[in-house]
Image 1 (tube, one colour):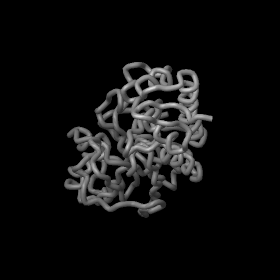
Image 2 (cartoon, one colour):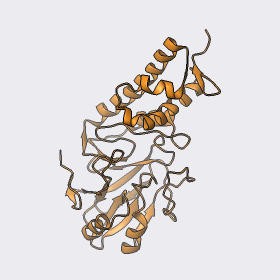
Image 3 (cartoon, one colour):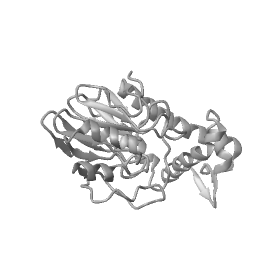
Image 4 (tube, one colour):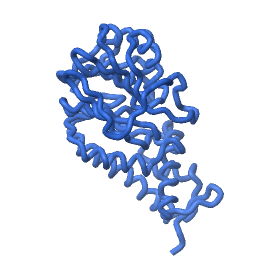
Length: 278
């Protein structure tokens, strides 16, 4: 496993280098990862935040070879550097845009949108787009086919689970996107935060099991307490998570409850949740 180094392009494979932005924090871990793919023509996945040293490191490594800038999604730690890097290099912008829900980067404009299995073909690599809504509705993962490395943005992160924030985030879509990822040949996950993840199919299955395990805890809490508001469910369902993170956990719990309501497995009445009468 290659360690995180800020401000330097770290080689991960014959085709991929990682540059990690110095924006570490509770929600970004050691920083947002940008991935540079290729040896002659280059593609950049997730340019990251607008931090001069980070942008300089990417432009210096690209050295006039950058042709494409792709984003996994438009959260503000992943896409804002796209505009200045495109202006410095002439590279084309690629990625999907949604209405701003309070979390989106509105500077990411003029990009070519992508559909499922769209590909970029360069001289020495092919990048395949996998639509992975869930964390947010415009999320895309990118598979570097030659190295079998899947760049996952915030769909999968090393060492933690991602926050799902409705309505742009959707727990049903997130779990289904994980299941769809199992259909592709992948040897490593290159996450938006953290280091490479080996045995990706095992990790994907673990994440699905983990999310469904949260839902079991919702059922157990409602069976015991009959009726609960979301704020009452958080410390029960996320009793293994530090209380300082419960405000973020509440967002994902809301996504779980919306999913379960759509499946007719829970009932909501003016913010009070319960199980259906049997």
